[in-house]
Length: 154
Image (cartoon, rainbow, N blue to C red; front, side):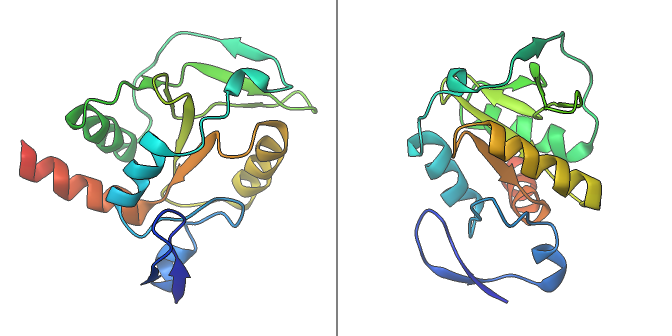
């Protein structure tokens, strides 16, 4: 399948399997480099304008190896990340916890490998409650690129 990168606007090919890991409401990127350009230079809308109250709680261990890879990748490039720092309360009382918050970029990051249908629906509700561009999805094909970079630079 052919898609267009949200950062460089170039067309790129993505397999059907990887395309299934993408949520339609998110920008997609052709590579980890374009993702990083977006994170560092992209939309700087403040998360503090979120209409939903935030519920703070302490850090816990990583829930997936993909999250560990993304954290290592951010560390290599000197980007400060905080793992699961808060939860966003949804209208029906459920909570959504972004995987990372990048305080220097004022951006939330969600790392996804495989989607469950309930997860896509919940994330759509979250996107309606927060400013556009304040949550970035990192699908599995980008995480795999990040893993290669981390292995080379260790």
